[in-house]
Image (tube, rainbow, N blue to C red; front, side, top):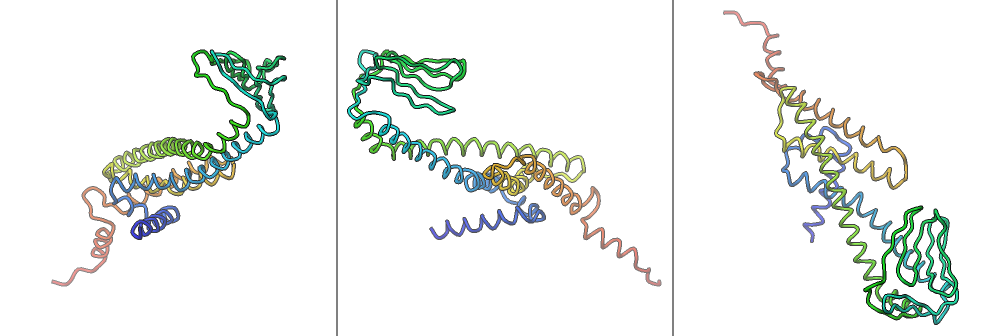
Length: 287
């Protein structure tokens, strides 16, 4: 466990260095391919998935609480919902309606009828099935073949209290895994694209790098842009172009640094060329 926390601390140091000191990117580029992929995975987890998970979990928890509160306030005690032979029935005398400005839910199995307006978005539960409407589009799911059940309001509330924590945990975990996978693939794809641009530019400049070095360098260069994009998203700020410009600016710096420090074809490095210039400036010794 101590080694794990030491690795976490070191990763945060590396991430901070990669974000604030562009000159360090050339050194990080000497690491292996796994280090670059792992760095992107950690950036995705720490700066995207964890903040998203807190927001998602809190929203889901409030949603379950609102559902339970809605049952208490809108469904009368003793209300029973029964599905038998593909037909849903209740002992309610009036339709159950939950409506706000964006969405409406209507359980329409009582003696009187009610439906959504032509352009309204929501769900209508009818005796024969469920109808979902989004504007003018309407889709349905039939109760035919569905297993029978009989539940009262109190049974539904008891099931919510019993199963909601497990459903919330498993649902959140599945959503977070999907979000992590999608974001990580996107960040890897972005790093691959920037790495190809860097590799091609260095090849044209006759300072070629191995493709693996180019990818690992751009993976670490993505630190600042990914963190900045996360902060802008959490702050609901519309400056989405800034992280992209920052990434390309870092790529330009990497290219400049690589060209400046690498020897031209047929020449030595920067120090060797400087040494030759010094030698040429010295007077020849007398014979």
